[in-house]
Image (cartoon, rainbow, N blue to C red; front, top):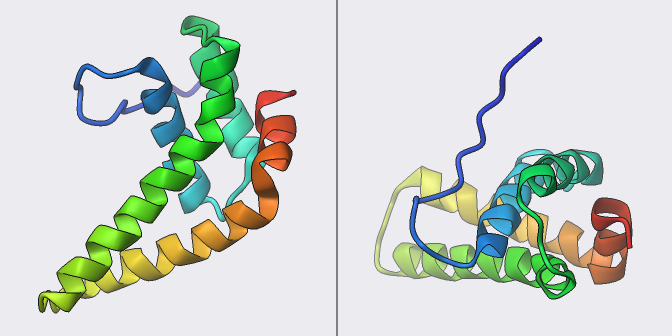
Amino acid sequence: GEIGIIDFNDLIYCYRVFDVAHCIGYMMGAQKCDTQVARHIYEGCSSVMKLSNREKELIYDIILCRFILSVTCGNKAIELGAGNQYIHQCVDNNVKFIDRFLKLGKDGFNKSVLGF
């Protein structure tokens, strides 16, 4: 079989739900909001790290906030004169992801990814 590695962000001390949410969010962003990919990541993470019901309820909101923050910071960098094409592409991709993610909705996300 194949071996996979999950990078849990910056190796900082924070609430564990942020690690799971960021990982799911970035993979969903890379996979055009694919909930099957997100579900596999969630199931893998939850097999070794149990989240409370309250933590599970926050995953959608954390993902959305992370992408909104990314777009905000990217737009500020562009406004300040960052001519970097990478920043422009990231902002465009993240805006598209936010649109798809909002259309999925919190209830749709919770049902298809978290199973409740």
